Length: 226
Image 1 (tube, rainbow, N blue to C red):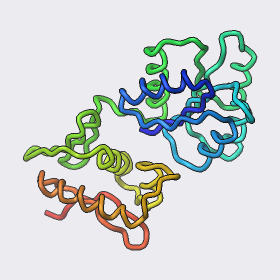
Image 2 (image 1 turned 180 degrees about the horizontal axis):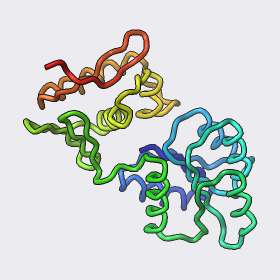
Image 3 (image 1 turned 90 degrees about the vertical axis):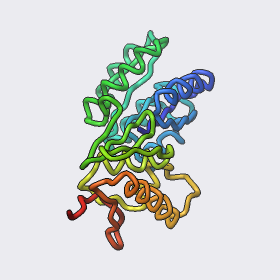
Image 4 (image 1 turned 120 degrees about the vertical axis):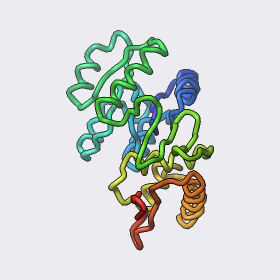
C-alpha cells in the first residue's frame, strides 16, 4: 500500500519511513507543504500522513484543497500536543483522524490500520485471493493448490492492485502510478514486460485466472475458460 508522508522534521520523517517500510508500506516522504500538495493531487495514495505545521503551505490548507478537489484519500493529521485548535480545524477541513506528538509506533500503526479498514483498503491476514490464486503480501508468494512461486516486490504490488480491483480495467498510467509512482522514469511499454513475467508465473502455478489485455485501454483479471 502506498502512503504519502508530509512531515518537515527530517529526523522524524526518516524514522517513520523506516517503521512503515518494515510493515511493507510504500512510503513517499515530502518535507514541504507546497510539494506535498502537488504529490497528493498528482498521484494516487491509499493514505496520507499530514503534519499541521509545514513550510510554504500548512497542513490545514493542504487538506482543504484536497477535499475541494474531491480527493477523498484518508488523511491522518499529526499535531503538537498543545495544538487543540488545529485538531478541530483539521476535522472541520476533512481529516479522518489525528495523532498528537509525541506518539508511539504501536499507536501510529494502529491508527493507520484502522483508517485503511474503514475505507476497505486494509487486507486481513496479509493475503489476497482471486480464483484459485492466493497472493501473500508479506512473503511475496503467489500460490494455487498445485504450486507456488516467489514474485518480486513490484510484481507483488502490481498483482495487489489487480486483485483488489478484479472487475476494473487498469490503464498503464494506473499501474505506473500505483506500482512505481507518477514521477518514475519507467516507460509505458515496460509495463508489458512486467505483465509478461507475471503471466508466466501464473501459468507455472496453474492459475485459473489470467491477466488479459483490453486493447487500447489496459489490463484486467479474467477467469480462464475451462
